Length: 384
Image (cartoon, rainbow, N blue to C red):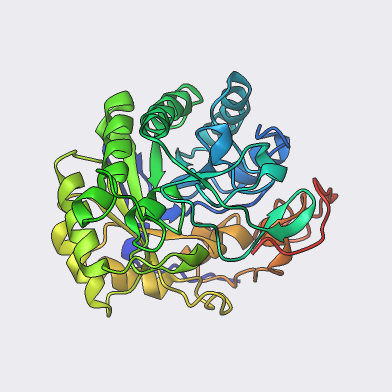
């Protein structure tokens, strides 16, 4: 049976700093909760990422730069030699399969719990997450985080820089600083989670300060051409209310623009939203756009291809896709030949479990592949 080849700008090669990308499709960072209890990536994660090496770039899932930044059970980390060694196995497998990887650095701030990390979470202000949180003991009420001191802030900035150096040592081509989705950097930027009265709170210029300092420290540590930043303007996930989005992000992008970073990653991008044009006009470098595909609506039949093409036409340079890559290891080829896509099986295995819903999605060349499922922690609730 003859297959049709789709002519799309998504499949055009491009460059990202020193990297040659064979296409403009990026695998977005996806929380999958499959590391060891100690945060070390193992063989299951190695297989998962190697299966998806045909992406122009893989951005590996949010990985904590220090112990107190851990969000949920079985989240990977990058602050010990064991973490570096575990991730090195992943990057070597992806590189052997022809791929390239960045690592997302994610500090959860108030999104954490002593049952998971053994530590009281820290945040810009003692404002708890307004919902329960998943722990090894199931979903429990969130705890009030400890307000970060000036020393905490300085040491956390240093932890991000150290984590970036560890990521390069582990074989990553670069890192993405996570300043979105209600994580720590976003908590500093938002009015409802930042009640500080020092130089990190109050006016916009103060509330963006921590994100700028982290990004600059990471860029100084490994080179700006190896560093991206992810933002999600007006996103209210994890109880975030920015309060002044239209002033916040122009100021943030102006502060970051002179660093010559590898890219800016805009989440929930929609060219029909005036915010997209504002970001594109304000950002002088590579813009990676993650299309708004209507989560939790089902994945579009074309996997987001048409949405990605509209964003490229509107000025984006790279397109990141999440669920499409989650369920389709060979997503690039399926989109290229207009083949049917695997649907995401269920929300449960997106965040919880072993091989099932993770490494056992079939490819066009291996439609019947099955793997044995394992469960790393009690399956009592969907993570989120």
